[in-house]
Image (cartoon, rainbow, N blue to C red; front, top):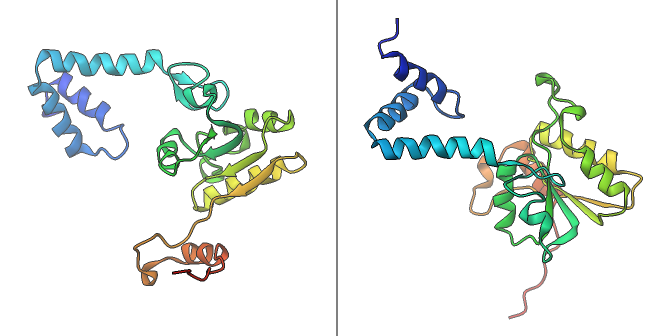
Length: 203
């Protein structure tokens, strides 16, 4: 028998489904909502309903959007012939901070045979079709430097072979400000592969 009233227990169970939210966090959130005003609780509920009702996937790049095509794909100032491939929509913010001026393609996952995620489960068909039609000059593979991310990048590179698209991979390595002593093997290997010639400084 739950120690909470049924509505509270149900809310806690639903909150626990959120990523990174355990039982204690869910209980804290639930009691915060209970203590909130009726207006704040109603605004939260309406925001969740509006999210599900209004958002969809862009028909071109699969980014989450409330208009189709999304703001990136519809922008006349973005380079529509340069496409950065990311795993999830949440990765776009990090790329945008680099002042990247191209557009995106969101896979919504990575290859993961252990969890039954194969090529058919990734949203990559649209990218291949655009490349085949000659609409893209460069595809930048910006998947994470994990085993799954690397496997996905390699699969995409193979899938795009035979088109006239230039396929590049983001460089990865030791982050600025970190200590090499604590870098793992994969990070150091990528850093060595991505090394470049040191230019002589001109003071």
